[in-house]
Length: 355
Image (tube, rainbow, N blue to C red; front, top):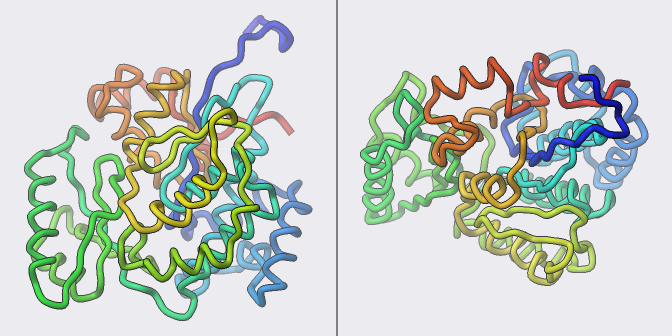
């Protein structure tokens, strides 16, 4: 590294924001431990939440023990995850990296809007906290996750066909509803009502003593069951909150939003309409982001690293970075990490400016 800062060519990076389910026991204290210099940013979030009668994220992050009851409900998890991810984003070394695009998984789309400047700081916590709190009085449906890949992290067509057939069978059963919610790398996330999820759990063969896995405190995101949530979001969150992004964004359909072409009405309508009601294709978002913006690396924001596998699987599917399977991904990462997960202590320092 003999080049000076002045003449160093910056590496191009795509930044990926996580969704729900990434702030777990191991992440407790993430803000206090890694971002003690972000007190003003955190205080602004907590000021907003106090006005809503909600717990401060500083207090939630500072709890002595992790609690499913306290840390996983949407009204708390969403703001916590946003604060951790945004704080990580603030610390990316801009002298080394040029951020050429952002995307995110599920709730990570709201975070991506903030990263790109399509929502200002007040608008970001407004959208994230409002949408995250919509089911505080009771969840609408739920989600489960199931693999559709083999041991090499290749898409398994037989598993995909099985999932599709289960969805069809469940929806032919009276009182049951089941939908694809997220295409998540080598996994499929399904959303449904309780009857539909229970039937699906009985029809999907058990794998690895883990799957099908119900996602705790998750509603039926990205499905028609959230029609009332979409309508309420549009009533409570005005179009005026949305702006043209300063950094290109890739959404859950693989559509690109740029500073030159974004129609803010369409962005508001997508975010609170299609994005809430239709499947979120995270795999496609990742594929489009790297194909269109040709990054040297991808940076996955914390907290945690639950998104690392799905990102790698999405890249393996298109043979990006020369990753043809799980083994070549692991070998490549050991030699020269093309994916840096900021939630992993071993990779974090390579992406961040020195404090």
